[in-house]
Amino acid sequence: MFGERIERFDDAAQAESVLHLDLELPCDFQRADGGRWHTERLAEPDFESAGRVFLVTSRDRDDSFNFEAAVVEGNVAVFVSLNSRENDRALLDQLLAIAVAKAKAADLGS
Image 1 (tube, helix red, strand yellow):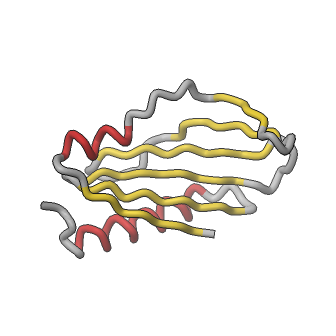
Image 2: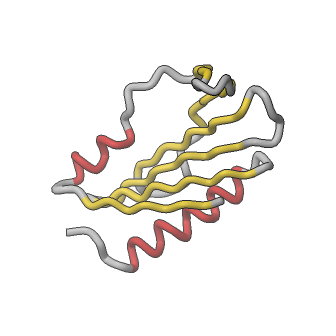
């Protein structure tokens, strides 16, 4: 499953703030339903723009990979999520590149 969200901010500093979440990673957590999860920060995406990538994996299943990524270009942030049964960072990078290119082509910045 793939999801995308684009947000425009008043200025580049506000947009870039979404990349600097105050998280202590890696970390493990348990949901109210008992599901156990692990979150880690991966290498930044390979763009001229700033970005971040998190990977959330199930501690109870070996086929649950949830990527959360963000790239900031000027005052626009592109967020994507990829949920997969395989650890496919290459697919995430490919889809993220398409999403960023389409956002740039739409000239959403101000």
